[in-house]
Amino acid sequence: MSWPLYLALKQLFPTGRRVPFFTFISLAGVALGVTVLIVTLSVMGGFGQQIRRMIVDTGGDVQIRARGPIGNATEIMAQARKIPGVVGATAHAEGVVMLLSGNKPAFPAIQGVDLVHVEEVVPLQRYIQWGKFSDLDDDSVILSSALAQSLGLGVGGKVELYTPLMLEKMRHDEVLLPREFRVVGLFEIGHTQLDSSLVICTLRTMQDLYGMGSAVHGVSLRLAPDADSETVAEQLNRHLEPGQYELT
Image (cartoon, rainbow, N blue to C red; front, side, top):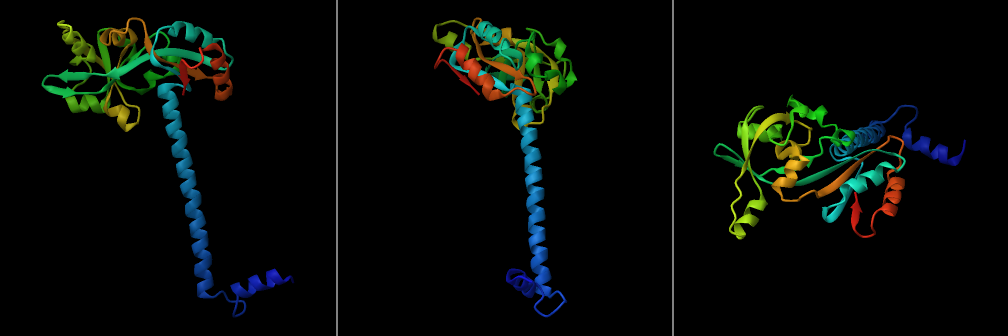
């Protein structure tokens, strides 16, 4: 018997073959600590994967942004679709509005989506709990469930939207009236912030509300399951103007 093994057995069984109480407690403590560590790592790993899947489902695998509005989104999307591994591309615009329902105000974020291409990247229909995504048009909106609940709204309700463009018009002695929209759907993603303060409208509506013309704020891409995001990003950078865009 080697000396290391002899010393280890001597420490474990100092009185013979019987296991002392303190030895048992020490072994049980180590085993319990290892078990808790394994369980914690497993739970956190699963939670991290769920958060990442939620982010990808709502924003795409890769997002192309710029310091200001993007005026050539159609060209960027066409170039991105030619890159191997890119299976979908869609443009979006986003901001903040004041939403008024009766006498109840709210200040949610708003996102305009391209009805033609958004389902290539973001499966919005999956998160619609009430109503239909196909009913969304330029005169309607879809609200997050918690936001609708706080305002006492449901499918078929009416809301008014106020935007920063109204303040800009007032500075030039112009008056821009708020627009009224009907609620055609309520969605629930599972993310507290998104479920409590987000409005979805069409991209054309968002561009009108913010006076953006045909510009957008970003382009989202969906990648194939076996595609490498870093490789796709490198190829995108070759087609985009250096220093003008940021990939996230």
